[in-house]
Image 1 (cartoon, rainbow, N blue to C red):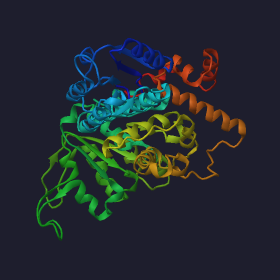
Image 2 (image 1 turned 180 degrees about the horizontal axis):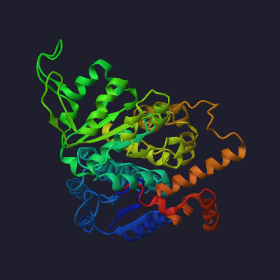
Image 3 (image 1 turned 180 degrees about the vertical axis):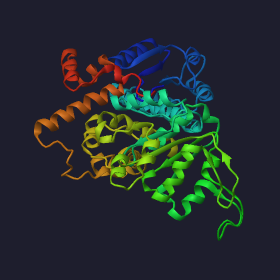
Image 4 (image 1 turned 30 degrees about the horizontal axis):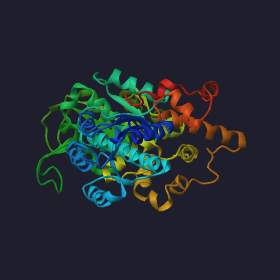
Length: 460
């Protein structure tokens, strides 16, 4: 099931024809898709553990009762919402149903508003349940090949295409991107889509290791090669033999260590500290930097020969502020991941609240956005899920539109785009939810360069 697809299907079960038809009409007029059945037995073959809908069922019926039906449904899917309908005389039975796991019960006679409200709430619960299950499966398969780089922005589509093109080559790669843009994710994607994926992916943050220990980290050492070396140690290069060695923040490496790295890249062999044995290597090196290494080389802060050796192929990751159309999608993705991880069911942000995400400058890029989504899940209830309060965006944010026209345009664009996301690019659904004519919607989509096809399959 798509994470953004809204489910609308209701099975309504009642043996009394006039009640069944009247409530079917009420629900259909409210935009729901209704399957009206005269008996519970007919509903069971329609159900599965991923059935996208909810059930309203009368308790007192010939054949299978509502309580017996509830027990059978819970064998199929314990989380499928079943609301029971009861007459006043059946209240004790209805209470028993709630104790056995019914989502709610409605006492006859009931106003249409009561039924519609219950259906809306139970459909929201079912949507979140199915989304969380899908994402839990995703979390369980994190170790399987194929880290996902999410986005619809042209630069991200181009990045995915370049990764596919480069993944199974032997070329070393240089990744350039600001802090938090996902450089390690790109490196892992290159590794996992290559024939090296059955071997180690070894990551080392050069900025996190003291300069005097980098050589030992890189090459390993023999016992007694220096004070404190009490035993043999395999270095990162050797450990990544057959696989991929990812060097993050390569710009922080001192110039003397850069000489050793250059030699390994050229000769593809190492010697452990304290040893004369040459160890051949079959590995791919992926380096990443948050600065312009060419400029650093010009300024003598980075070796020019190493820069040219690393710069066989360069992948550039755009900062989040340059791909703002991906912000709502990424936020929802991270929010649903957090829901699954922390076993929560957080409400999706309303389209009008997306303006808070779009006006934020995101200096920490995707990492900051992911943290914001987790904060939304963990602490959002304390501030009624108000994104302005959660983000604490400064009023003088330089990326916030200043004129009334700019603010109105960004707000309008965010609402239309969020609706397209929620309805997988369905023009008909967006027209209905926003209550605007087709031509008006198309005109506004053209104005804001919104293509409905971009919202069909955001993740490749």
